[in-house]
Structure formats: structure tokens, C-alpha cells
Amino acid sequence: MNKPHVPNEQALAEVWADLQADIEASVRLQPNAYRLAFSDPEFLMRRETRGVRIQLEMLKPDLDQSEHGVENTVVVFGSARFLSPQAAQKSLDDAQAQGDNGAVAVAHRHVRNAGYYEQARLFARLVAGHSARLPLKERIFICTGGGPGIMEAANRGAHEMGVPTVGLNITLPHEQRANPYVTPALSFKFHYFAMRKMHFMMRAKALVAFPGGFGTLDELFEVITLVQTQKASPVPIILFGTDYWKRLINFDVLVEEGAIAAEDLNLFKFTDDPHEAWEIIRAFYQLTTE
Image (cartoon, rainbow, N blue to C red):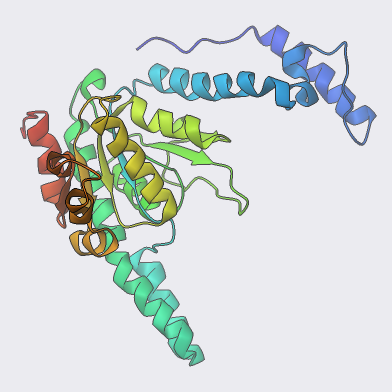
């Protein structure tokens, strides 16, 4: 693996010393024509420099992942709102103790959906266990959106196997922090959804979509569309939670109405078993089990 490029420490120190001096000299940092362009936050945040910011969001995660040997990933999507079994059970105990029927009903739903958390965790353990014994260039890393819920579960499963795990987080109005199971050197934060989704696909060898909301649907159909239109190479696309997905979306209607071709339904598969999900990926790439 190539060693990470280390910038000239003296040059960086001078840039940040100048910037820090400006911060300390005024309550609100003012634009400074003499300041180096890349150390001028006001300049970098202008509407006209949006293209530069987009390019930086393209480069930073790409370079950092390459330097850490991350070239192949299995991307796991799913709800950020699903709790771990322990947290879900606590929410139920608390609601019952308070005698709040509405809270009890919500807590029962948390307990039910916590099953998906455990299944995502187990799936990630299967992927990580396979990869842990391989040379770095052949490993498949778990990659998620880096947040809570299903994302946390998948990162957690890989972390428990002692394997690095990737998180591609994003700034949201309600602050979302990276979950504690993302490898710190592989924990990235995005401003632009488009760049984040591009990074999901750049290294993805498979996509596993657990039950989720608008964000999960957005990411899922982005991938399906890219594969359908041959803008991306075919990869296994797995919808985990058959009942959820078939209740949520009647894919057959799309065929019946001529909105998609019948063969487009072959772009993805349903499953309810973490082992079957991993077997679908393993068979697609003819990976050995030994």
C-alpha cells in the first residue's frame, strides 16, 4: 500500500497560523484579499467557488480510501431510526413504567424493527469475516452512511470482526454524527448528497437495502437506475425484508403499466436471511468459502 502523502508541515503551519491570528484579532472573520485562497473560509464558501468545494468532496474521500486500501465495498442502506435490541427493549421498559399507551405502542414497534438491526449486524460480520483473511487488494469492506440505526448495525458487525469499516456521513439540519463503529480514518462527512452517492457507487460491489425511509429509497433507486441504464456495471442489489419492500412498493404495477420492462425486475433480489444475502454476493463473484 502506498504511504499517504504528507503535505509540507511548515507551509501548512504558516497558513493555519495566519488564519488563527485573523480569528483571534476579530470577533467575526472578515474576507482578506491578502490571505491565501485556500485558507480564506469566506472565499471558499462563496457561491462562485461551489465547483471547487464539489471537487474537494470528490477528491478527499477518494484519496483517503485508496491510501487505506479500500477499493471494494458492500454498501448497506437502511433506516437511521431503528434501534439496537438493547435500546429498543429499554424504550419499552421505560414506556411501560410510565404507563403511556402511545409510547408503549411506539416502543413495541422499535422492538420489532430491532430485528433488522441484528440482521444487518450479522450480515456485516459475514462479509468482514470473509475479507479479514484476504490480501488487502481483495478485501470487501462494509460501507454505510455512517449514521445510527441500520448503518450503525452494519458498521458494528464489521468492527466486531476487527475489520476497518467505512462511513459516508452527511450534514443535516438535525445534526447527525458518525456512529462509533466507523473506522476514524474512514469516516467522511459530506455537504453534497450527489457527491456522497457517487462515492457509494465508486467502490460498490453490492448493495443491500434494509427497510428505510426517503433516504433509503433515494439511494436504492439511484443505484437501480444507474444499473438499468448501464451507467454502472451490474452489481447484486438485495432488498432485505421481503414483506416490507413488497408492501411498500408494488413493482409488478410498473411492469403492468409498461413503465419498466419485465426483465428489469431481475435487477434486484429479495431476502430475509443474512446468510442468503451474502451467498447471493458470493455466488455473483464466485468467491470461495474457504
